[in-house]
Amino acid sequence: MFILQFKEVSSVFIVFAVLMVLFIVLSVLAFMGKLTAFITGSKTKENTETVYNEKGVGNFIGLIMSMLVVATAVGMLGFLLSSARWLIIAAPMFFTVVLIFAIIYINTRDRFVDDVKDISDEE
Image (tube, rainbow, N blue to C red; front, side, top):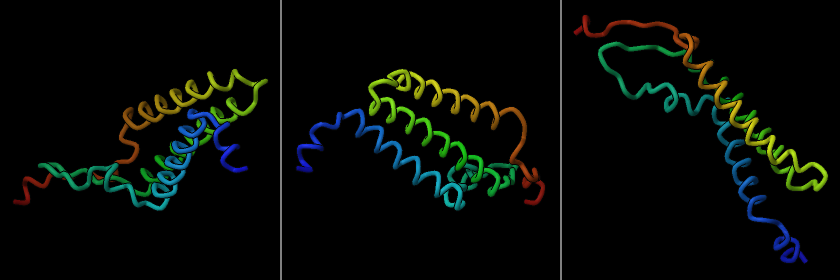
């Protein structure tokens, strides 16, 4: 009985489900602060060391990932409801808007920079 129900699910629905689980896991890791070393680039240092607010970066990335979960859920809902096929078009649009907002928000000002110091003088 379960195998017959599984065959009825389209491959697009499975892709949406996998993306949704991936975004949920990444969102939880970002809120916990486990991804901040990868995001802020704290492992790569040059002559100037920029100190980032890691908690703020983690919270922002977690929020963005949560919004991508909502966008993925909207797409899944569009595949489930035959009367709301417009959701299939709305989901990638919402996904794109969230990503463009995140890129613009992060790069417009030094929102997450705590301190900038020159470490070339210390040597």
